[in-house]
Length: 266
Image (cartoon, rainbow, N blue to C red; front, side, top):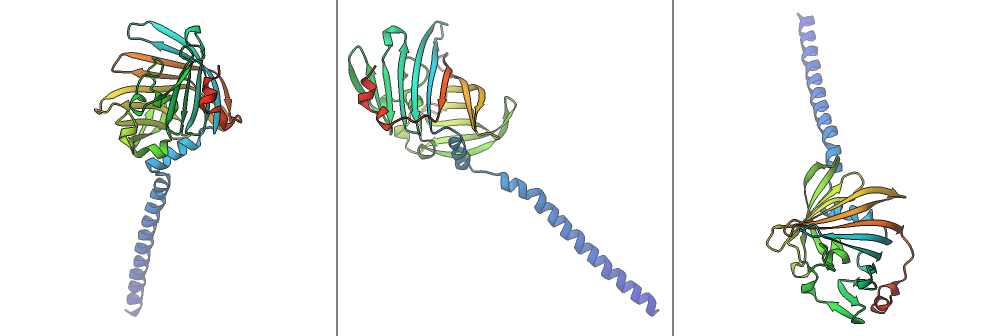
């Protein structure tokens, strides 16, 4: 009898230990299975910051811009651009002859346009920045660029596959709506390399206005560069295609390159 009681106590004790062990294993399994997901989660602002960090500090490009109207008629222009940081851009038109020497300068949200015919630099007012850049489907704001982290609140809407890539979908809302001509942007960011694969632009009424499609990505050192950028205006039925013919990454560009005096030089 004593032996039976002793055996029963041991069995109960062993069962309790096994139950505790199983419970601990379940908890550990849950922690192990969920912890990588938690570690991989990023906020919209963190993704936007990562995307901006993946860009070169400075860049010089020569590109061909083709403006395609709804009727199908085309205009082709050649441009050279110097870019430094988030807030310094100089664009010069190389051809055709009737606009050769025309220049655009953007520094710290201040924009100027130089027309050789008038031999005069004209400052672009804030209300004009959403207008067409030299008849294209890009606005002056688009060409001048944004300080994304400073200009927008970013929210992660989700993750979806686009063109065979897993992408973060970001919703960007202007921090100062009076300074930006869009009510919001939606941006598809490659989850692995953090370059932008598509951006939707919404007008001040909240309606889809334009869609930008970068393509032809290739790698130079640690940077992913797009060879082709297409901006479609879904409201007008027109589009502008920029094909980058030459690229120089991280060149040393002096600050005095981004001045109105330099803008006037042809």
